[in-house]
Structure formats: C-alpha cells, structure tokens
Length: 257
Image (cartoon, rainbow, N blue to C red; front, side, top):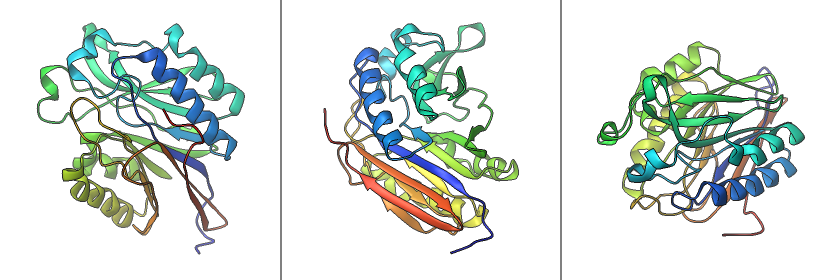
C-alpha cells in the first residue's frame, strides 16, 4: 500500500465482442456493458479499438461516424446519466476528409471528444491516415491518457502521457494471441518504468479475420498485474485506487451476445 499516491476512480476495461459493421447493434451492446460497469461504480468505460464497427478496414469507409451521429445518442445519454466517461472506437473523418481510427469519448458533462490514432500498424495506412491524438480525459479529477493499439509500440507515446501527468494510461487494442506476450510486456514495462498504471481493453472475440487474445488487464504503478480477463468472451476489468490501496475485480456481464 502507498498512502502517498493520489486516488484513482474506478475505471473499467470493457472486453467486448463487435458485430461487423453493425453500428446500431454495437451501440446497444456498448450501452448495456457500460451500464453494467457504471453499476459497479466505474467512472470510465474503455472499449477496444474500433469497437463500434469491429476491426474491419475493408468496410471502414462505409462505417464512418461523427460525434453528433444520432446512432450514438444512447451512449451520450448514458454518459451524462451515469456520470461516466465512455470511450468507444470507430472510423472518423478528419481534415480534408482523411479517414482515421478514432476513439469517441462521451463525457459526463455532455459532448463528445475525439481522439485519433497517431501511429498506424503496418498495412493500416492503405485505408487510414495517421491522426493527431487528443487531450487527456478528466475522470473524477484524474487525468487519463488514451492510446490506440499500435501506439503502444512507441515508447515516446507513453512517455509523453507520463510527462503530461497522466494518472492512468488507457489503451484500446486489438491484440492477437501471437502478439500478446510482446504487447502486454510493453504495457507492463511502461507501468513500471514510468510509475503510471496501465489499463488495456482488448476484443473478446474474433474481428476482421483476426483472433483476439482477450485478457484485458490492469497493471499498477509498479508494473504488477492486478487483474486480467479470460481469453474469450465479454468481461469487465474494474480497478481503482483509494488511500493507496487498489480495488480490483473481473466481472462477467450477466448476458452475453
């Protein structure tokens, strides 16, 4: 226990399963899962990369969403009603119509902030353009820095978050079984070397022809793995720190798709 550490509100990595290209169905499922996280006291619900469409580059241009898209209203309303920040992934358009891998952040005070992935995975540049990132989120007065998948392979990204005072590095990813040891090792290393807890939300099932490793997780400020979801299925990994003591749990939502 480290009583000198500031409190961190309960935050949830939501290990979800996406329906290919079906934004309406995915919004409904996101709302149910985020509501479950809120019922457990979470102030942040972090979904995986491109969770609202699935990781489906071949249909991304036809699945673009804007912050004011009417299909997203249930998530915006839930964020306000529950006092929770909800981060969900989708293709978004930027300047001059560029297509980006985005993270839509539904804020408890109303409004939607947009984060765009800065560092792309090899091959993604055939469809997407690099984005510009975004501002840290204020989650119960704790600054939270976002990362989207391939960005975690760039140490400078996590280092910038730590320099900026992030109380949590929140990564939305699609990580396959073959890449899990390497990528989770990077996140664990950032947590330890930067004294910055790391929360990771991975997909709970296949998407875009990729098998996901699942195992969404939380590493504390010493790099210790405190909570990890199973390899498959939908789960909530919920963690927060109060009085220097971590409170963690892995919760399986009552209904599965």
